[in-house]
Length: 467
Image (spheres, rainbow, N blue to C red):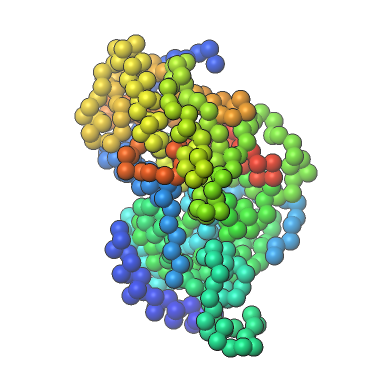
């Protein structure tokens, strides 16, 4: 196993290096500005601009996804693991793979389905800020196996019939004597990519061991700060492979980015109360995309029915057609933990921004901070010079089934500079066409407990302090 993987990875390096060049009645809220997210160790303008860029790039990929290709026993258990927040805009968890176990950090991503880790001593990451990305070493694990081409799980990755040429050439070839491995995968994430080969490996959870877990062994990536744990829909995702009834998380505030503070991810499999609603949660049903058969990538996403948006009690006037899915599978709203700032198509964003401008400038006498807008890429921004407290219109999301979310101000405004301005943390791009109209990002989910009830096809949530 060790020699096979090492040799194979060495042969891939040159090819991969070429690929890496691709590039309520209360509608007004008053808050102390000290509650907002500030990081004195960083240039806030530069950091926000970076998060805007990554959020837009992520949105472009989600709206136009591309993936190129060159038996677990059910038990009743609940597993809890820690989640950490990071300045690159994502949240990570640590998982243990192999025999003996090797602990590797993963980005928690509900917008993709493959689980992969940086792999082998030859792993390379182009355009990565850190050169010390932990890698899984297959030769140190007695349970590592290359996934065979005729293994049914190979088609989970490639979503198509795999041609195993070395095996099909032999009339009597079977899965037992075919030595051809599953073809390598290439996954694009908008801002970067990863490429590697599939492994069958042991996943070690605190109270459960899962043998033969399908995981990607990536030997080259671009702009990926860690491996990715795909929690989206799809056979390769962690929830699918564990046959989870539900999973839930509470996302720590981004003001604790890159610190030792953590919150929790809960994996629930076979709970005796899996049909019952969790106390205190408000639910909205998941929405089915009618065109996932023709546009397989959209089948990964968790769609919800956002019906309207209000600012300061005023309904934002938007075309309802952008809030619903059309016959081609475009439109609608998805929830994505891998996106930082919420994305909206211009037809939804512009009326939202205009409503904030109207209420902040006309009703509250704030002025536009055009300099902050130019530096951060966010808009609208407003000057709040020397103010210790500021008044903001309430932002409320109204979902199918009557569920409502009134966001805390720090979940939709960010302080920039030395606290002299605040900016709305929603982004848009006229170049983004097709796909979801709204991508609800993790910045808007801070200090919310969010439950993905897969058994009953619904999303539950409540505001709480995540710790």
